[in-house]
Structure formats: C-alpha cells, structure tokens
Image (cartoon, rainbow, N blue to C red; front, side, top):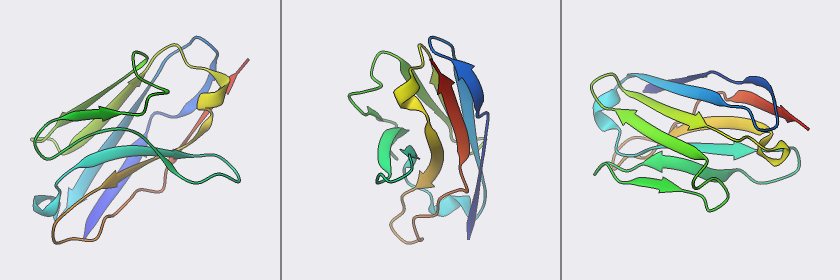
Length: 116
C-alpha cells in the first residue's frame, strides 16, 4: 500500500499564493507518476499538475504560468506552488499516484479556498 498525505491548503485572497505538499509513504517503490487533482462540489475531479515517472511536468491549461509542480523522488514528495490564485481555483486538492502494478492511490485531500 501507498499512503499519501496532503498539506498546505487554506484560505487566501485572490492574487495570493499557497504551497501544497504531498508526502508518500509505504510501498513507494511502486510509484510511477505523481499528480495533483482538484474537485469542486458537483464537478468531476480534474488534473491540475504533476510529474511523470520520467520527470516530465504536466499542467492543466488553466494553471500554466501560475502554478509550478516539483517532485523529490528521494523524499517521495510532490509540491505545488500556486501563485496568483483566483476564486475559480477554490477546490479540494488531491494527490494521486500512477503505477504499473499498484492501485492508483490518492490522498484525502486538502481544501483551498480563494476569496475574491
């Protein structure tokens, strides 16, 4: 099993910044990619950003130039630096892994609220 714990969410005004962190533990050898998703009430969970097993970053168009994702394989962490936050960024942010032989575990999420 892989356990994922997210942290860093909170309340921020529009234009502000937050940094989210995801720490993986357990059977981390099975992790390929690590990604951030977000979900608002009534909507499907959507990809925000992440890093593949090959180290390639990936971003949703809506966050490009504002968010920066970074991964530390030695520490099994995935960080998301979010700048110039907008009210539409308000959501629960989840960390999720991909793997060729483990389930695609995800964490419990951390809430980001951006006030206008």
